Length: 639
View 1: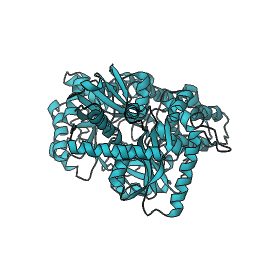
View 2 (view 1 turned 135 degrees about the vertical axis):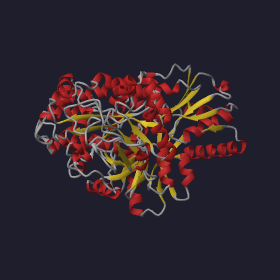
View 3 (view 1 turned 60 degrees about the vertical axis):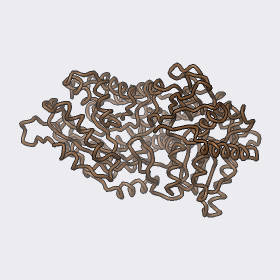
View 4 (view 1 turned 90 degrees about the vertical axis):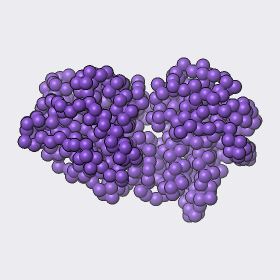
């Protein structure tokens, strides 16, 4: 992976916008409008693709899923909707519980449920639908009910939004889809869907979901009567909400399907589709993912969008009715193998995922993991992308994929490396802290000695930091605590339910400035270890699958050595910036976390990226303490 590329713009209005992107500065309304007005489509695509690669590497995600639309009967009559009908219409349908369950199978990872606002179905039917799906298909995650439907439930059944969401979550709801947003414009709402909720209410409902630990998605319906300015304002409002609640997983631009609505004669052009994807990626700097929804883009345009900022293709879908009621020209489903083929045709790596974007399987070879935290940036800032493909994932995800023989190397969490060391060779590079880790932090309401039997919230993202915490509690302080997994999508509101919480990675850097749930004590685990042992601590080690060709191994070592040299600043490489913290992706990544270049540099200065004798001695010391701990069974983790 390389630094941001030099782009030769045909439209010079894009040049200052690109400078802002590279500097980590936010794009504003006038920037978005200028990008929509440009005819320099290729340069726009290069900008968005570079940002996408910085976030997602070579990965393009897809999910084995099924869409279920339980009914098309709806109390609303939106002008742009060809799906909804009234109960007495000849083509009205209502699915029974058994019919809904009959659409599912045990191969699915996700079910996506949206439909009409039925005037007669009782509340218990919706809740029972969640329960029945989870009871019969426990491995399927449920993405269900747009904000429009949640608002309808709240009004019809006289419950607060929080009550509606809480009951659905308890019954099995995992996430919410992003539909119903349309365009955040009162002008457009009055013209096309004046019976439906507007942008303010939509955002309020998603904010409530995020605060309850329910991640959601976001959409924009474009290509009808909206203006270019209204499109940009829509993305800015989503970005502002994400700054506040941080619960959006992905953004899905939805190309308008004219059908028989009479609103517009033709479909959006491929140029408009690709522009909208690219601009979405550039404007929504705090959204993890941008989806190329093949159902509306078509299977011809969607793979091209993967070079214009998108990193997700949705999934197999199974049967889509809403867009196809409006005469969408795409198929109603795609086979898993066909999606993999489409992604590979774009030069990307197909990564099968779950509903939270955790990778399940990698459908390509020569893939190495990338920890998407600031502390790992030095290794990837100028990664050549050959002979390996780079796939971002959390340390724990990397360990699981390594155990499943899905990836060939990367900076493995130390605990995960020890689990697979018979298959992988450790290289002399890693992520070690000399004293302060800054990004492995325990927030607590109690001092160490008073954590006996207290509830500690732990992250699902890593195992090494958790094991370090166990060692410190048991061996340094003689304390036994109760560990409980937190929700995979961290929310600050979740932390208040625990006596202490372990926060790692970029989240810890964000919380260092923003604080967290009024905890009284903040303990840096790197410093705790160093004060106790006098040794550095190694959180991750670079490894490569045994049997990798000598040529590939040497190519990787050469890149890692250069990264270690650049990061150390002791041996600046001719022609390259002296320090990653002062130029390139280090500063760009740090700015997204609210860090100044000086703060980024101070953070990098605390790390050793080449593993010497002292780091290796620290690894053995830690391993010995873990062995003692396993024997003593000093800490019980409550699952």
